[in-house]
Length: 99
Image (cartoon, rainbow, N blue to C red; front, side, top):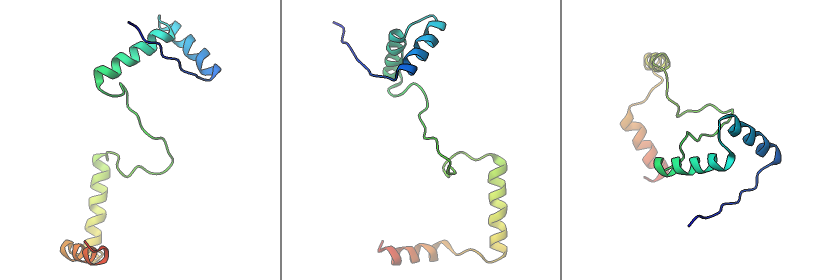
């Protein structure tokens, strides 16, 4: 038995996707079926999902040069006394936040 899925999309998106899938030798219905099949096979989205924003991504992978640059900045901070011992900082955080 087959189930039916109905999806509402913007007219322009439908026209563009129909044209794209036709150029690829298929149709929108089969493309959606392929997407669902791949999602089940991947046990998730079959492509990367990410947010797009203007703020810097502090959790992105850094290049080797970026890591070396940050290490050099850290070394300079140590020379200038702009650092604290980890155990002191942890103690202060525990006191401040009741940890």
